[in-house]
Image 1 (cartoon, rainbow, N blue to C red):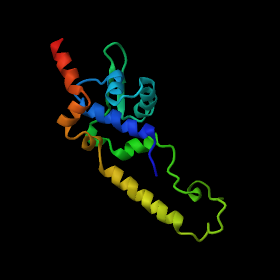
Image 2 (cartoon, one colour):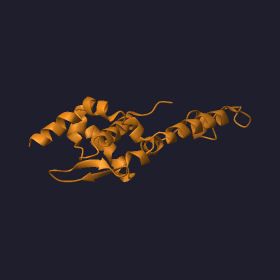
Image 3 (cartoon, helix red, strand yellow):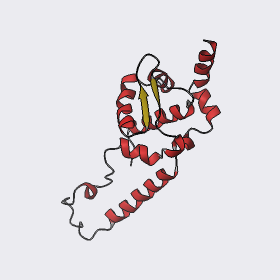
Image 4 (cartoon, helix red, strand yellow):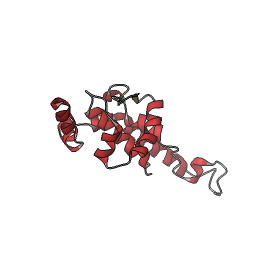
Amino acid sequence: MRLTKQTNYAFRILIYCAANDRRLSRVADIARSYAVSEPFLFKILQPLNEGGLITTVRGRNGGLKLARPATEITLLDVVRLTEDNFNMAECFENEDADCPLMDSCRLSSALREALNAFFAVLDRYTVADLARPSDNITLLLGLDKLEAAAIAQ
């Protein structure tokens, strides 16, 4: 199983916002930190906003922030919003799959058990867990420079 690029960057956006929790985060700054395009990030923001994980503020001094504390946003919350399906085998997606073992095969139940274990682990971790240690992440994301620039103004 491989998570999509959308999920990967959704985690990154949320980590950025968690590390920058005292201010609104600007998409331009997030894009610069991760060396990715702003339009790509805007596409990811929509499900995060609609799913209640981030809040956006429009206008010149606008930006985005976490809609609730980072300790309350699990990795499973993010994955459920950003992944389309979790079909690990043909029989997951179609009961009419072309397999002669369909009615007696245990593969499907073993894969479902594995998927449930995957979900259980994701549910144990939060965005706050990913944003630690925040001092190191603050430096890596360039948030220290943004804070210094804000103080200088």
